Length: 242
Image 1 (spheres, rainbow, N blue to C red):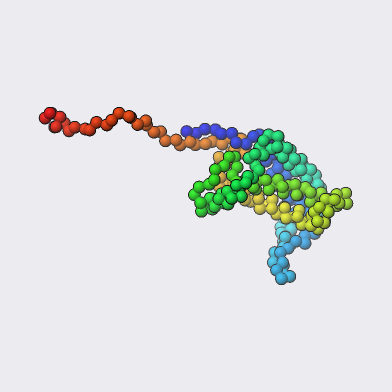
Image 2: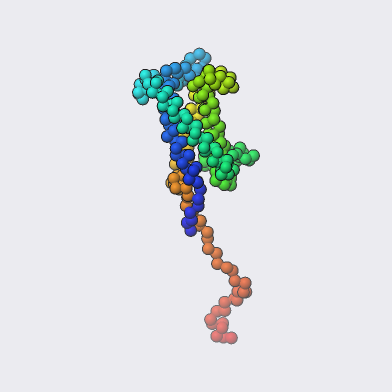
């Protein structure tokens, strides 16, 4: 038997789908800004093993000499990104949705069991309400990352006016490094999120569009057992003889 189950309220769906293009523009415009000064690289014994990003990358995506364009988009869309995040947090607080998002005491242990289940090492998954333990941790972490991006972004944008934020971040260079690291974290989360959506199937994706998902309850029908004693069957020949 199939039944419709409400899952995501309209506000949650709007915040989710609005945030996606906003974050995409922020990452792209941030890359245009990063081109002007890209010092970050992974070095081993003084030798650069990996650089963010090689020169061919900038030319391939036509990133070169677009600093002013990147700054214009970044500094406009950051306010939309911050406003959308603020409204999302306020909605979860006043609507009670935070109960499904915040990790519980057992979330860290259960999150590992969820990972083992996703890797097909464990057959069963811990019981969950709206989100499993791993989702609770990751989604809460994304909110904290968004706050970190806002604080470090303001520190980089106006280091003189927000000098106290720069101080809290450990200095201008540290704030820029944290801001860059958080951006890499968003990209990794996006890739992981897409993989999880594909693995979860169409029903889960549809819930984020329509707000509901379809549950298929396969309940076996059992016939009631009779309380009357079962009489032994007497062969036909023996019955005639009697």
